[in-house]
Image (cartoon, rainbow, N blue to C red):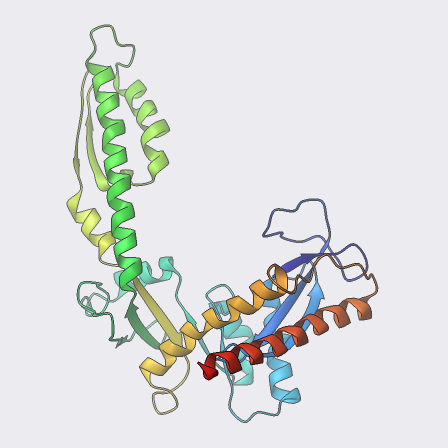
Length: 308
């Protein structure tokens, strides 16, 4: 999460909200699984999210003196490199998830478990554990999000229909007697310029001649992609006796509880920015007070929720 600032701890970094030409700070918010804020820390504005993880590990180990801790982070925070270089050396457990590209790779490498990696074989309220030789010390838990499954299927069908309209338009131009769009090279150039914008060209089998264009849907390619619609894979180092599959999935989903905190701090009610103080201690104090304000608001919301 990045905010704008001008001096000292401020630095030029990746700006997620597109505000160019201004320095910023980066801050990390540590929350419990129910979304209650626990700690906040300010970093230089050119610090990437993954690089803030080691400081949080040290804070948990020493400052809070907890016996067993599991870090829960999204796919961009707890990466394979972070697991190898920072979490495993200090024997800290973690819960994260695979990126879409990792799931596709996993599908190719686990032909003996085709049902577990198919959205058609998993119900919305169940989870399935699989294994992979590439992740020998991890539990891989496959889950299904039905709403996302339906949305991806709808979006893919819309893109396919839009692409078919473009193909039909190009085919009509080719068939015109005085058309300049003739010859395989020109037709392929036109196809690449217009059809590929929808990024579903891989789902069509296209035949091109000097005076004709024909196509059919690649049903096998479409089915392979649909197989992963709505699927996500939670990965964790925790043993089954420490945390069940369902609890591990719930813990990963609890990351959504952190989003309201970031929203409140950055934009909604508290609005950390603009920051008018310039020295590093003042900046850290400003962010800390904002976190305390959200801490009070979070508890007030809990009390109001429990009173109904």
